Image (cartoon, rainbow, N blue to C red; front, top):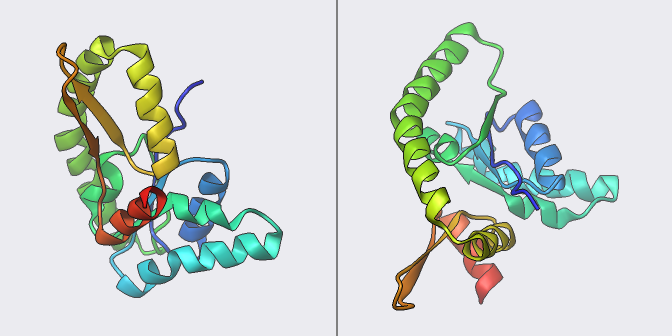
Length: 169
């Protein structure tokens, strides 16, 4: 089974939280960025309320990770959707910053991932994907020939860490 794409949404307003909701309900891990703290702090609550009103599973809101940092929101995303206010200067600035981040982070990451993916045992890859889906975060399993290794769970905020720990504890 293919891993679902990780989604980044830029803007947590009316459209942004709705876009995040649709992707989360479809099973995608979603990061959502907004420079306005009040918008970010309410995004999961708003999505859960919408899902409840629609008779859908409110747990999908847990797949949405608010990010106050643009790099954290787009760094692991496979697909990014812009939903910023309809203000040309805001959008231009956001696109410039996002493009710079993607260029800086994306190329080396793709090169590392291409080499790492070829070396990862399919069973380990499947386990990583299953854990990533269950925890709502990127998981990497690194092990040596001796059987020793480490489990790495990436998170972008303390709220996201709390959500991960809620799944574990």
